[in-house]
Length: 602
Image (cartoon, rainbow, N blue to C red; front, side, top):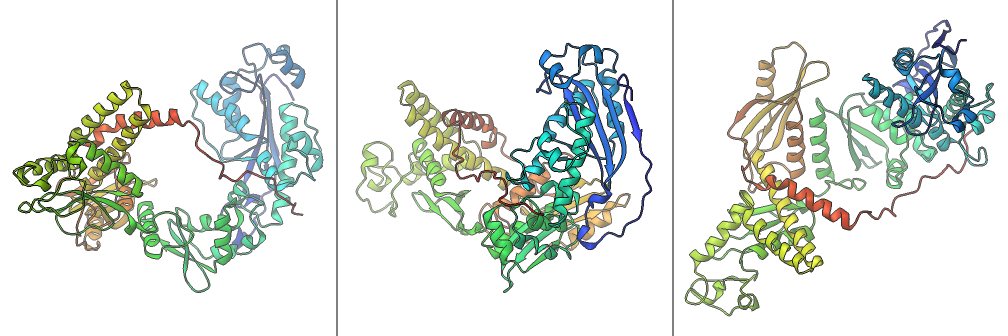
């Protein structure tokens, strides 16, 4: 085998048809063609260093199909310590191909295969960086890291570390790793086969299971893998139920069978999920026509059943709103229910503390009353200390001393404008306050005012964005699919009422008419979210804002205020960066450490 040019050796094998078992639905390992690759380089940085040798072995079903090996002229001097480590010198690579010849040859050799490497991020990082330097398209193949897999399978009693030089003797490799690319690739082949043989005994038979395997998944979880057998490989929602039929957990996926199988054979080491799987007795699928429909159905089912093992979207009815009351002298009040009373609502907020910050920002900028008593324009009462501090116009003192209904209404009108349109009234007042506090070196007080303003602007921007869609009686939009068809969504008052797909080449008109005709009837309710939760409306908005989405039909107007709170996004980002500089590290002590398994599987 010459080291002056890429060398490829193909091995002819006879393909014997094998009947796949039901458990092996997916990508059976015996049908996968792996290309085990190893690189030698001039250093550890893919951006600053170069490849000096590429070695690869192509295998399928335990048989070697071919080999690839070439030295690569890096166009620079090989560092002495690298030459000592690998035995590759400048003289050896002087007549070898440059990367622009060697890399395309390797990409052709590995086309359509799954790449395997020991410490894959290193080798694949150099290959990807080489493609970028040469202007080649990186094919982004599936990959398996034998080092990572070994950490999940082996115990320290079997191997003190997961270096290739340690694992090769453990799996009785016929090749000794010696820091030469082809020899190390051959040794990695034996390690891969040894790991696959070890995992076959615990039910890992597909590529998907191999990539995501974790020995921390208990045998009890794996024994329930049959719960996924009857599920279709289609997009949709899945519901885990216990013996009494109660919903334990709701999730979504583009492949129901593949996703649910991961709970039993994949790296699912969340304690609560292991507990949930232990209680589950069946999994019910809800097949959906599009990914958007699956995402929306998941939100609705979680809200309907409140599964104990779902952490988000369980109680949308507990959202908090800031309400401008309907009375002679309106005030701000935090409520949990939106009524059909003509009041202006700001929200929804997930935390009461965030709502309180937004209210405090408004009170800083506008002299709205903060007392909770009912005030009559005809019956004066005593004023509180806020009137003495000139933080309130004291309408409670009557029109002769305090503000009249008309004067006070101007404050309420400015608040309405800030929430529904231009928030400059609140922004300018608090910004001036922040600058004054910072100039006085009262930085903590300035940060508090910044947090108040951020809470208000963020809430107003979200409300304006949601309201723009919920005010539209009906909207029909379409997005192209991977098979050159279309997925279509019908939205009414922000609620997804119908979804479907149009096959490639079909006339879209009849399909759209059918979806509109069979869509859910919506009777809008009160408030900014008349027909759907904030999460559902945001889900629909994200889909509508994806590149390639097209409006097909639109009843009414879909528009946001020209100078609305959304235009303050740069300020919000700057505030977030300022907060991050003060607290650069989040507390992550609650994260579970990655541990080696306690026992080996024979």
